[in-house]
Image (cartoon, rainbow, N blue to C red; front, side, top):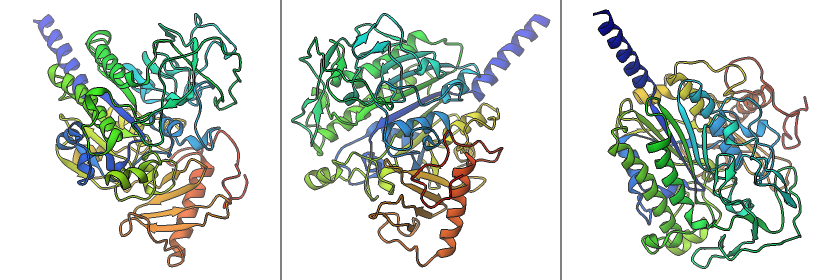
Length: 508
């Protein structure tokens, strides 16, 4: 009898743990604009049935934002719950080979979930810095790659170091590539897409003009590449490896956390043959349709294995659409940024307002919409609340949980002010419907104020009419920047002192 009661208690405990600890999959696209999702753009020139399914079966966030407007800093914000401009990276992006931007033992989505009993995996594009054996003139690929996903909370990694145009391209699994990048290449013309390139054979050997990367990992000259690497295989390989890990490599008795950052629709725009001509928006639309199809493969696998109910699928993009969007609008009448101003790299809404969906059938009401502001930095605090743990003062400094929104459709509190950041270091601060865009010292830039509730397309600055709003927002911006955090807690500071883009602030 006692043994039976003990077994029932264990089964109940395991069941309760599973119910409160959902499986988690974060799917992250690359340069996908707000208007590149069917349910967010009724005039879209291509179908996205998997994204539409996430919307129908979960919650759509219509005012969601990446934490920056280009790859590296947005990925840092997503994984750490902290703005990347607090680090040494004040503008631009990293190349492939540089110390990882996620420093030391900083809490990440992976380390948080792993510390609560999860199996953790990352499959796809990293773009946060790695350290490779030797240098470009003297590699030893028998030695391991370091300062990479396996050092930031992930137990399994399969993917590529950065965007395809930065090189060191091979199919890395763990700390090694089965076929190492021992050849060289440069960009080749991509004749099916607008202002684009390919990374494809033939490749070269014996190059001697190999300059070393600068401190952000950027290099000029040939790209290091593996003989078996072809750009158009990325989406298929990443999806296949994700499903393989889910089916064969994870511990089935533990919940799982998967981070799946795709390389699309970032250049090169390279849909596989079966998707060519499927859209009404050229190769870009075809590529988005292929991307959506791969997302559907993940959803189908969850269904087939009875895991959908308690799996939280989070989908978003790292920034707005690449600057080919105006030509796509002109040629195909497809607006990748929707109604929003500009795109990737820009401080305006088109640069950082992105598609964002959460499907979690066990907890989230299907077909719901939330219109309040959220940021990708908020995911860390949300997962911490799901796991019933508190973040310390040096974790998730800019992360505000939206679990109440997921569970009830409403926010218990107004979100704390959100900071936006452009590729060249320009800041904006958002509170409620108010958005104040700051200057960086360039003569072409002026301070601007928008009421996004009335003017979501940012067509007319109303700064002069609302000096009190300007003063309030500047005060909040200054405090958030100077203290090193948005959330309550001890001042955390930034990784550097004052920097020259903060022209409106006194040095500290």
